[in-house]
Length: 151
Image (cartoon, rainbow, N blue to C red; front, side, top):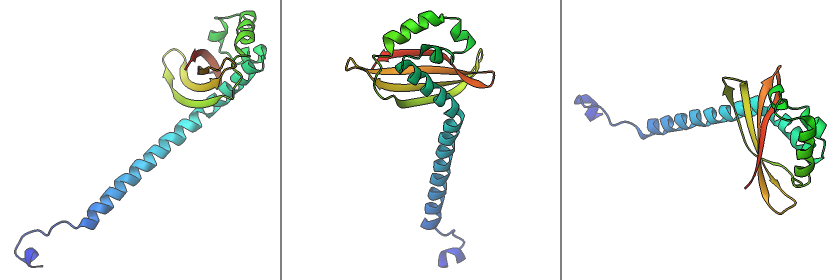
């Protein structure tokens, strides 16, 4: 009180600094949670399609997997050539797919895009990273490309 009377400001209270730090931390947590939920919600359909694609490849169902391609992807490989790939790769990728990453964004040529990455154990005792890029086509997620490489 004597400091206030003498015209000198009082020292800031420690509680107000704590409250400010708590508010900032709360805002950061809410922002990160909203971002995570947004990516999960927007990419949920893409993950379902990529899950179906992997399941079809693992079960040697080439026509079903091929049906999930965008027009652009289907133009790069014939159904017969894709069946050859599935017949070769399907038996190797026999482990349970583990989703290890997903991204969503836009591309100037294809519009909305999502990339989903999986780890899959192989029958050859190696672990593979399978990256599937999807694009929205006619309102539905479709496979634009896929890549498999050893981890």
